[in-house]
Image (cartoon, rainbow, N blue to C red):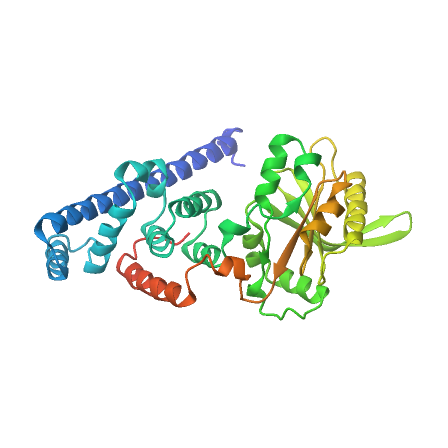
Amino acid sequence: MNPLIPNDYPQWLMSLKTRIRQARVQASLSVNRELIHLYWSIGNTINQQRATQSWGAKVIAQLAHDLRTEFPDMKGLSSTNLKYMARFAKVWSEAAIGQQAVDQLPWGHNILIMTVLSEPNVREWYIRKTIENGWSRSVLEVQIESAAHLRVGAAQTNFERTLPAPQSDLAREFVKDPYTFDFLGITDASNERTIEKSLIAHLRDFLVELGVGFAFVGSQYKLDIEGHEFYIDLLFYHTKLHCYVVIELKNTEFKFEYTGQLNGYLAAVDDRVRDPLHDAPTIGLIWCKSKNKTVVEYALRGMETPMGVSTYRTSPELPKQFADLLPSVEFLTEQLKHSGDLIEDISGEDEY
């Protein structure tokens, strides 16, 4: 380092960079917040005029023209977007925008949520998860299409009995049932190793499906136990739970013996891989093509190591119980087309 530069300069520089990044994020959030509240205000005014003056489409078109003329550099003043503003003001009250963190989402995300989802509690779930996970608009679209709100926390586990209360609640939140791997482009008939290799080849999409906190450690992770070799299908570390996660992939219906095998792997990882001073007990997951709920319940009942059982799918079709609760493909396609056209008009929005 230059002798004229103080020794503590690198630390000072790092601190300054952090403050600048935080300020930029806060400034971006502030601008977005003001924009969302402006859109709500415009939409609410339009709704009031519609109710008292019987405004029609021609008035909205004229309003869009006049606003664009007055503010030529401002994006998002098309007649289509004005109609979305009016709809937005009907969906959310002004107080709810801040309470539900709606104003923390980019406008394109808000359009997607309010046009595709109709139930308030489901809308709120996707808003919360988008903020927690930093979902881009395209990832949010995939999560909605795959009914993520019905899958998260739905796996059968023994976490409540085998993990302390704070960790057991968090652990249940990171497991799903089913997991959706239709991004692999393979058939349900593929064998376990083919699916496993494809998941690693599509690691980015795989990590998105797993959720925030998963760090990939290895595939076919080798355990050498006094001359006997064992291979874990997938090994991850969860940065929020501070523990290793062992995943065993089975291309069959769940069987009793799967929990016994996983129990041995968990014990070995706890003894030979885990740092007992810093890492929580290892968690295990079994992914099967199908499962009987009662059989899984019996299999987990006697296990003292934390584990869960989920199903997975590699084909695009959702299970019927989920598909019946979602908008049709045709409806989604039409709504997303309109959203895409609008987003071209408000291209100042970044997709993150």
